[in-house]
Length: 100
Image (tube, rainbow, N blue to C red; front, side):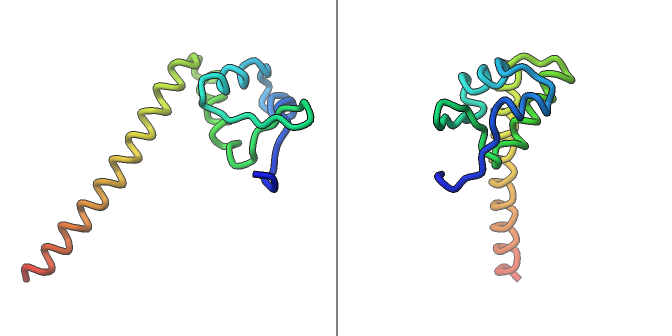
């Protein structure tokens, strides 16, 4: 994590036109990871897309942090199910090829 690109929270919030308290609340709920270095708070570049999505959900759709957390959990579960379904389809395909 030492070589990871970091964006200051203040810069992110200024760019997205949101208060830093929103990012703090997202971090408190485990939705965004904040890195602290030399008394400054940063968001990892790899998390920017996720953080921006959450800001849009909050700002554009008026969804509170609890709602964002529920949406994130559902999306993660959906992704897991899609991976599982792909694996099952591949197994069925193999069984179909072996039966012929």
